[in-house]
Amino acid sequence: GHYDHTGGLPFLTGKKLICHPAALEPKHRKSDGSWNGIPIPASDIRKLFSVTETREPVWLSSSVVFLGEIPRLTSFESTTTAFVNDEGLDDFIPDDSGVAILSSEGLIVISGCAHAGICNIVKHAIKVTGEENVHAVMGGFHLKEDNEVTRETIHCLKDMQVSHVYPSHCTAMEARMAFAREWESPIITSGSVINLPPPMIEPD
Image (cartoon, rainbow, N blue to C red; front, side, top):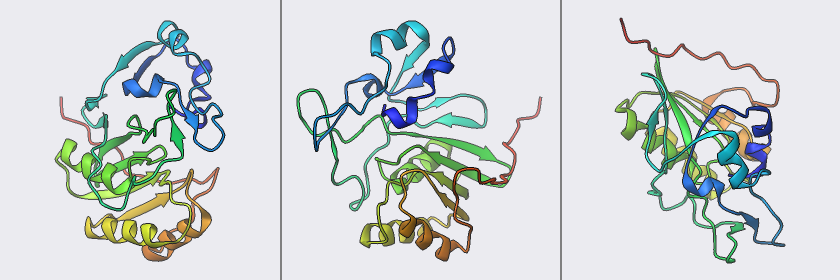
């Protein structure tokens, strides 16, 4: 429910919107109290969209699933937060989620900002889909430097035998370079093209 992931909503009105209930709650930066939430009031969103608020996974098709609320399982992810709610209490962004796609070559996991931790997201995607072969993980990893947390994340994804890793939004260049070295993959920027295998299609 942060502004940098929802700025396009005014151009998509009338559509079905699936989100965690906390996505529509007020959000602020801890540092100065400035607004960090969706740029449209929650009351207007409920009028402009067909809204489904859920903490549970939702299958959008036979091969694509919204992952719902991500369990925080790892010891090194989601340990601090830079955000608070209206009451000034720490907001660990429970609405942070992702999408998983069952492809012809394995699971593809797409994150938004990975406030829940990218390893937690991948683990949950495996549990929800039942597919342990992870072809690709891509999106924001919320890693700000090449530090111990980044190294733990790399080790975790390696343990899960993830074939391809493409960190982007909210991942510092130093961290991106660390992933690129480990997976011998290109560094992804705006305008990059990633060729992925097609989703699995159930026979008629």
